[in-house]
Amino acid sequence: MKKFDVVHYCKYILLLLAAFTVLFPPYVVLVNAFKGKNESTNPFSLPQSFLNFDNFVQVFQRASMGTAFTNTLVIIAVSLLGNVILGTMTAYALGRFDFRGKKLIMLAFLGATIVPTITTQVVVFSMIKSFGLFNTLGAPIVLFIGADVIQIYIYLQFISNIPYELDESAMMDGASLFRIYRTMIFPLLGPATATLVILKTINIYNEMYIPYLYMPKKDLVVVSTSIMRFAGVNQAEWGYICAAILIIMIPTVLMYLVLQKFIFSGVTSGAVKS
Image 1 (cartoon, rainbow, N blue to C red):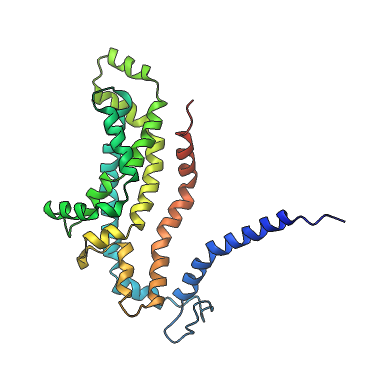
Image 2 (tube, rainbow, N blue to C red; image 1 turned 90 degrees about the vertical axis):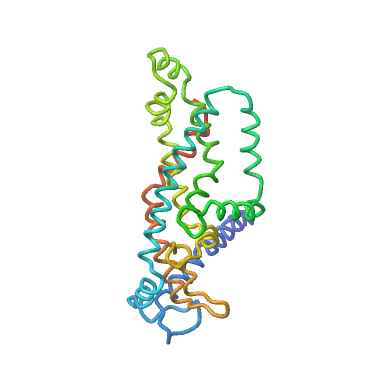
């Protein structure tokens, strides 16, 4: 008779609990997105029909989803362009050259990662307002460009794997430092750039706090803050909220399914020196 293995069964119980924890919230969102106003208020019951798209139509009309997607796309495009250029140039300077104050700059970057973001919001908000960026798309763009310290450390890992002999050969041929960066370093950082662009796109797309705080103007709605149109102080329209969540989830889920192999390969390839 096969011996009863407690550890074996506990392993499966934990896996089932983990699967239930992950899948239960999407199930609640899915079934409530298709419910009409006169249907059961039980959040766990199935809708009468999965072909009832009234909630989705109302979401597009009342939450200005077209404007929200346009604003989000502009913020993501400009932020990524500035972030990649600034991140690669900073990592190139820190990874290739020795200069006075380099260790202090590296220490400042390291310190910035351990400072809780919420503790600096009063100062950041005052700066954004003094620059005249409050209630403009420029506020989140500036914050997303300058707030990614992790990106610089990932680029530094990749640059450390690029032989310095390539730089020396280019210098002997008369290439300037900017040309070396533009024609050699930047293209070789492609895998890291692709990975970080994907991860940062998802991060900006899901960010709610910064747009909600710095862009309260109605016309500057983004996809993450569009859900707030259906939530008040004393009540919330859960059918519309669930429909909006499904609409917002579709681009990120498709993006992750198509590009997931680039995410994992990019993260791991910079972690080990060849």
